[in-house]
Length: 312
Image 1 (cartoon, rainbow, N blue to C red):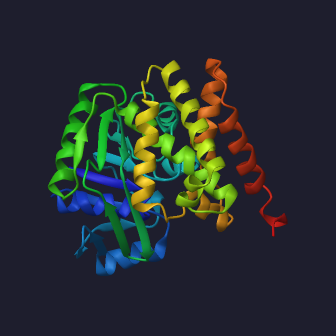
Image 2 (spheres, helix red, strand yellow):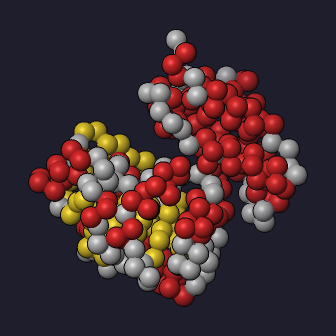
């Protein structure tokens, strides 16, 4: 099967490398020319599970010059989705299947608008990655399932593609599972991202510092409860106590990192707040569910994001 990774930063490069190791034909598509040229020339240097190896992949730094593939995996930030797809239309045939592995919630709504007649897959990744320099990535994979995959519209084509992709990822060395309820996994991860990304960015602190402060923990609890309430109104059942316990355990193991949105704020970049707390607040407004904690996180992040030039 021929895959294209649209958005080949850290995670896109890692997923592409794993699929290639699993025996598939893969091309990385990203405008980061230095990264693409380095991989094309020397291969991708991949560090994963204490192993270092070089994976040779095709690359394309000019998305407009792409050719059709069987599956396009989208890994750009949510606010870049429309522009990225329109800039790489050559990747898509009528029967090309689209898969979002993007962070946050609401990505499938954007894809369904762009591709109303195309089978769509969606997945959530319980792993992280770092692009340490052009052509070199580090994957952080825990002991559990790294990726959950499911079909958005349950069409036969998408269901078969989900099954195949999970097998290809496992063949490449990552634990991937099929799920009939991928939205539950996506929302469960959205809870964590909503609790730590915006708040850590606003407060300029790492995750452990947030959780160790009593008011920080209170904010985490309020955000979590609001997400659970909104999800329930959408027919997605999440367990509040389990979510809190899992987050506390995770922070105890590895809470020293600065979340991606906090890094975006540090470097004065546009954030994905609209796909995390912003999406929760928007769904809450539609469904009549109060989300004051999430709304305030959104307001503060947007003020910061839109006023970088005035900040000290």
